[in-house]
Image (cartoon, rainbow, N blue to C red; front, side, top):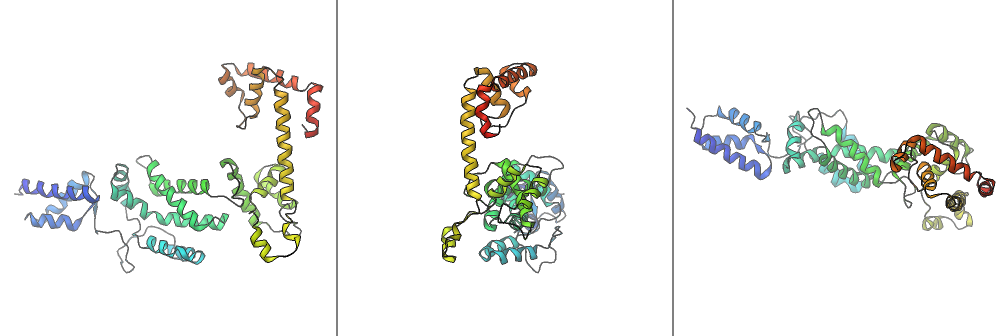
Length: 367
């Protein structure tokens, strides 16, 4: 009959090891059973008790993958070796990082399910293992964004790693939830939040960035031997059609994705004044900006002639405060009025603005 006191001592020792480093190995289980002179058939029973208590048991003490280890299981269908080679070819300085990722044992069968609950409860080993074994996903996505949007590869990897860590913090525990399918969403979000297409010296709102990604892909695929620089009418028409936007918005997007000029690089290559010719891109942009500022000033002046409530209703309804336009219901909720009452106030305010003494001020702006 097995000595239950000795068995409990073995369990206590193994639990202490688990608390110390976040996992135990099967060799450690066998070692302590042997030291306590317990029969070897207790190995399976002890392992069942430990795993039922949430203890992670590994076959090997490390998570390092050896090239000649035929027992390593890689469930991925991708040829990561080619992907890693491509990254190093693009940026040789990333070779140490890629070597580190290559040395990590890929996710093993059912390993993620055993780790995720432990990681969410703060187990340091489980958290580190979940992050490191999914770094290859970051590499794959960063390379994809480099090829599609010309994002700097090193920066994409950095922000992708941040997204991977954020995914572990944010992931909800659900029976059918998988970290490997949840994490890519956060990786994409963080990369897209911090990296810019083309003009990275100007702040671009998140909602505008979403449009720019599609426009950028269209521009990369576009070729026209009649193009006159950026503002090619054929390209503007294609962007307008595929992105469902008017020509003016298409032009804005094309200007925003254009990389800024470096005067140092240009002056090193050219000596004539043609290097300072921007084909009218920024002249158009500045003129439009000035017109927009003037129009805002005129509108604010007209609104000041309205009653306070009328002015606020129009501001909310048409987004004149820089926010998104609101529906009648949303504005009604602010004032505590019905949808119909807000419509009446709006209609009355617009009627006042259409008076000839006021509307003539907007004619110069095609309003």
